[in-house]
Length: 392
Image 1 (tube, rainbow, N blue to C red):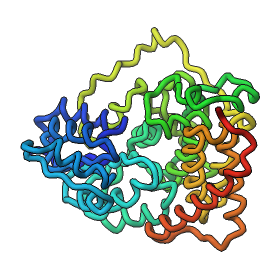
Image 2: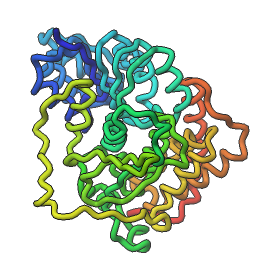
Image 3: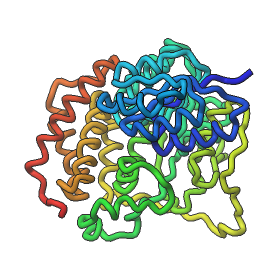
Image 4: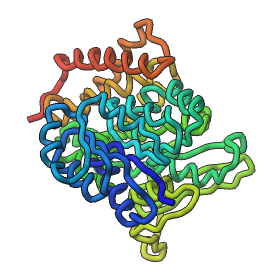
């Protein structure tokens, strides 16, 4: 019997890898719905290739274009935030939640609330609304499967053992495109420089986060909620080869690690077939050819974003939500060439400082998290006139 699936964020990088796997294993899955952001043509192509029953686009202005593209195909279409949430609410066995940004929170929660397995690739669910989101998972009895290569590696390295047996969990970072750059050179970096990731092919926002190392900070917050582990037992190490994705050190001194080639189809396949394994075309590791694996501590001086995320995680309360919102605003401004690269952590830091003086508490519901997110974005946007640098 085929498993029913929905793909939220079907036109992004994670969505594309998911589509590839679904096509390779078409005999095992049937697609209920696919959803995307604003590219009507790409979404229509995905819907037809997967023989999906419906396609939903978040951008209401593209609703007519999507409907035209799907004429005579038999695929139903809809547009807008409400339609996205409705599509996510359709009962299926497995949902890929890969809508980036806080926009992915509402549809992902809708998928969680109807139960089943949810493959989580949307960081903001746990960073923006960690406590509230995990409470929704518990209430619905949903199965949450991490898609990020690091968290998926940790899940596999944990091997079903209790986190009580764990001494530390370590996330690896490639170091991004600026790992060997001087502080002065990093400060002058342009968007095109930051988008040249040495290992992974990802969307623009997450690629910039990798360049600032904010991505690794957000992943620490995610790991805290996913594994219910104290922040003091989480660590980060820079590993340029991106072969080891996560390490689990147990209290007896043993260490297990999750290794794979840097191909998102590996962790996606793990969640898609779970608890079984699916074949993938990912390159197999050849350790003799690799030769050696190296590690180094992250440089918090050149990459202050990681320190800001660690501090927000330690502070708890509203801090992680504010951190995420301010970072999204700052990254968008950098990509638009309105601020410089080091203005990204500056804006985040200033927003956190302002928010710390406000009566904000940890959001107890997803709705409260979204309201706090909106307020934090407003505070972050107000930091723009004080930017010290304008990119040209």
